[in-house]
Length: 117
Image 1 (cartoon, rainbow, N blue to C red):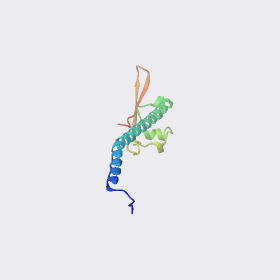
Image 2 (tube, rainbow, N blue to C red):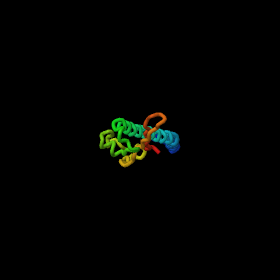
Image 3 (cartoon, rainbow, N blue to C red):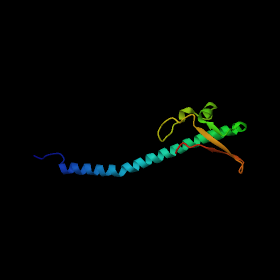
Image 4 (spheres, helix red, strand yellow):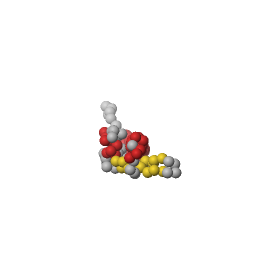
């Protein structure tokens, strides 16, 4: 009578191969996820800066050096549903501010907002 099944050595070899594959692929997958979150954070930051620039173009006479995210939402330049930090999936603080400075050398406004730091 012939036994059907796997020997202990065969099972250990399969477990060893699976372990090696997991050891090799885990850092690659983790790095890809981190890079993806960084890119998403940069895009979110660009979206906020773009909204602030559009607000600045429409309200050039009342620019005071900063504008809050909440004001951009109230004035319709940002959608509050899409405001999450991709790095930690938390809501972006609506009281955080986009800094606006005037560069007299180039005759333009500079907008700064740091979400991804």
